Every structure is written in C-alpha cells, then in structure tokens.
Image (cartoon, rainbow, N blue to C red):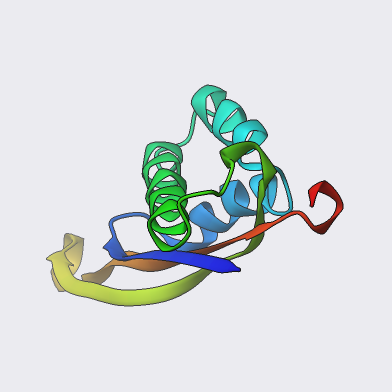
Length: 115
C-alpha cells in the first residue's frame, strides 16, 4: 500500500531541496523525522510537514497501519516555476535574477519485513 503527498511551488531551489531529500530517502519515517528536526536547511520544515501529511494519508486509507512500519519508498524534487526579473547594474548593464521554486513528492510504503 503506497501513500503519497506532494507540495507545489516551494520557495526553495530544487538543487538545495534535493540535498535534504537524498538524506532521508529509504529511511523509516520516524528516523527521517528525527533527522529532519536537526538539519539546518530551509527546506527541512517543509519536508517534515510533507512526510507527516503522507503519514496521515496512509492512515486515512487504512486505519490499522502502524506508523513505525512505514518507510520512505520514493521522494523526488522537480523543478517548479522560475520567477525572472532584471536588476540594473553599472554602466547601463542589466543582470537577470532567477528565483527558482520546486515541487516535492513523497511516497510511503509499509515495510514487507514487518508484516
């Protein structure tokens, strides 16, 4: 049984979000949440909330699921919209500023060894 949760247009660059996503991929949910509590990255509270949402989705589908048996089967970060604007610079030049956003999706599954 796979439970999924996703969030769109997180105001973090995808490259930075993938660093934290790679850190928790394949871990049990409890271990991943503990690890995210101590990671000093801007995306870690967003991932923490997203994993809690996926746990709630799993318990909604099947109320007998134990949270300790869930693990992060897949987590991926896609590139979202990019806000572009131009800032003036010296000697009449202009520099483009890119504000990148990302989409994050988490899939949880029950550990087959625990059943």
